[in-house]
Length: 531
Image (cartoon, rainbow, N blue to C red):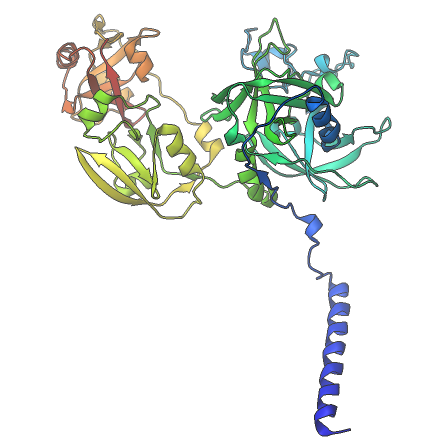
């Protein structure tokens, strides 16, 4: 054998031997790469425009094809019993916007155990652990056993089991939580034991295409009546609802019948594609079930979160500003020097937060964020929360009729800390003067030294304190609250009640008035227009 052939032979032999040794080592040390079935593949999204005729078999076909993707979810948790007054605050009152999953003690709640199962379980004595069962819906998004559902369905659960259509009695499969998000009320589960038959994945549509009047189908587990189908239309778009104590999510509104137990189920378009996750209903104590108004989280929102849900941690950006919810009118745009009515008006800038560090000030109007136009407050919020914390992006603002560009680096949003913010109460004073009325539906009082100290008003700042705000008034609609201190009117500092009153009364009808108010240690920019 020639030297060249010998060298080639040994080289091939060495490569084969190295591969074999490597496989043995990997098997011994469990270093084999994770199977792709263990990872959630990003579901494909069909953005083809909806169209085509609907006939007598359209919804039958959707149900037949998509019911196998839907699962019934059962949860168990142990919790310490408490007196009902601890949940109701000693009062009974109606909760007009209830989630599907009523908490313990909420006997009127749509998903309370009493509503789900007419057989009442014996109540544990007060102060002892009690087994609580819940029911909801989910849908398969990956053949590896990954399932989407609502966060409120599985929150606090010690045990989660899943049942598929056609399953025998007690044929359930255990699942675990991979990731969850309170703001979108979404959760990603994974089966820890798999059925013997392959799973069928739900198909994703494009929720941004949905319009009022579009047909939709809901599939779920209402009142434990598994795999129930209901049909309706999209009633409204971008309904602010749910979310957390301080933030809301734009939702799809539908009249497709949604009831207790439908939580986490899919809302499907006429192609049988998921366009939303059924999340909440509008109801009251007298009608604890469906009254034709339901809400679904748009699937595009959840789809974008899937990589973070898979990682088990949701990371969002925050820049530390409060934005006026009212749209910018033509008169306001003219007064602020804007070329049009697009933009988000900054009403408050928190100290030592990214916006303050970047040089943003109250009264600024943010018109671009990271090169994208800001149409209104909602569009700005959506872009900020979608920004990876620590990433520096440019923003364009208008201030004093001038366009400026700043660079801002968002922090990470902490929903729990944000929801726990408090509000200081105004100290009482026996020497108060009678309130002074204004043309804006609010009453003002003088700032006494005691009030100034109690509200931590900076030395040298004067003005007037808001004693009361009429319901539905201009001031109320602008967000003015009792205990606010008005320190500026139309960019001019004011020293007392008289100056504030004169400035407000002299404002022309139909023209915007700019206020700076002191609230909870911060200055807030507010706009309102005299009627």
